Length: 379
Ligand code: FES
Ligand SMILES: [Fe+2]
Image (cartoon, rainbow, N blue to C red; front, side, top):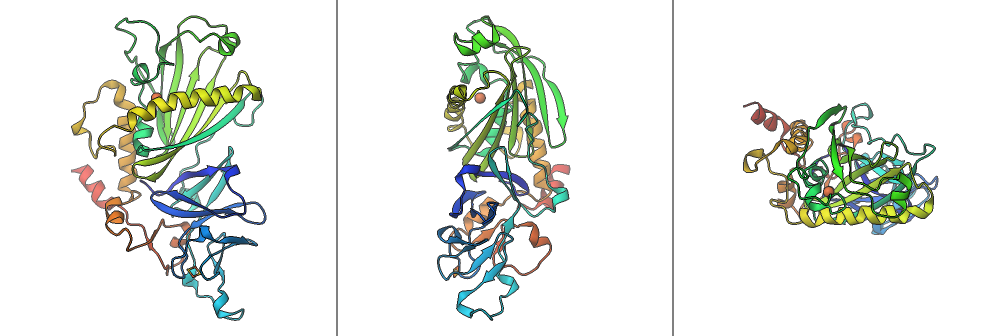
């Protein structure tokens, strides 16, 4: 698991003025809306004596701890300690980590890391969102899969022919599972590729009617990752019908991941078709999850020497290289150390404020030594 990326904490409609505990990167956070309706996200551990802020309530623009009523605003500043009275001085060290929050695409994104704004990897963009002629659906699920394994699965063009009966053409020719040439594209925070696949005839019904395509056909698909935890997938069933999917994976623990998916389509754009799109997406993702749940080891291996790659694994090999580069920057959480201290130490994911102030009650979460990783890679 990595700090310094934007993670989806939940659907926008999940959050109200009632504080909610959200687990991400193996840590607890509290998310609430302030009186202006703006979503806020803080570390959930009260800096008095460890109360769970999510068990408290929102008062004005603050969340109040259920234990002794300390109040913290959206910037993480403690603004009230009832036991010292109105005139008591509130020490600076009571501040709590607060994280940048963006509400976009019907989702709540939280930046979990300490990078200043200018250095943060941006949120994956959905250029079609809100444009005429496009309709969005969104959905999410949580399953027992490591987030990196989930991203790699999205970047793997060879599994479709075996895992997804929706994608399989009914032919037993030797060619059907062969992955053709991949046309790679670099993007600022990732890599992608385009290829052509033999798609089955569209099932009778609205899709076929809308497209007029009743035969199997070579169709264009494109996929890529953005940052550590997002994937885009473009499927063009005909030269005019586009399905564009944007997904984000939020690690809850190393082996448990919440996936959020926004699907854009430029056909059947009325609400009545949404349920069918969502249902089909779940059908496909359940097939992925069934295979991924049993992949060993749970985490993506540290190097590629214990697997055998083919050219169709090239996209995920490049993703792994990028993850190594982010690890070398010191962005990877040292989960072994966190687990070793479980129950004895409460950690916080370092927030941007940690670069401006010293003196924090909670230790920043241990990170894998980036310098050491970089050196090992160079040797
Ligand atoms: S533990 Fe939160 S106010 Fe005391
Ligand atoms: Fe899949």
